[in-house]
Image (cartoon, rainbow, N blue to C red; front, side):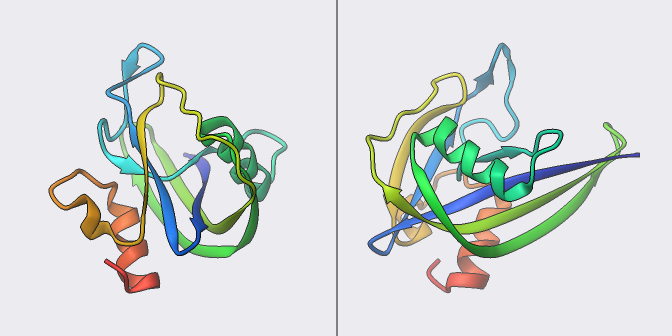
Length: 140
């Protein structure tokens, strides 16, 4: 069985959080959670620490240099189709030097700054993000 590690960041600025909308197709294949709102993150590469991956993904996915504060969420799930366990670490982070948000249209189609998931009522939101907002921040 394989073990895969994923690192994400919930980026905060002035009491608002950055969310990005996943594309339907990613690099020619159906995306996981297509058209769902998510936060920057991705797979931890070989010889990379999760914190380093979170910093890299923030630059790659939204063009933001961030400072990581701490781990705010962890979850794991077994994917029987891939015979793998996926463990996700989510860091709380703040922007160091704000630049324009730049999205790769192959991965994400939109972004929003919000203080509550209520701003996305009726939209698709990745399940772990709902847990983070309701459990950790009590701002859902």
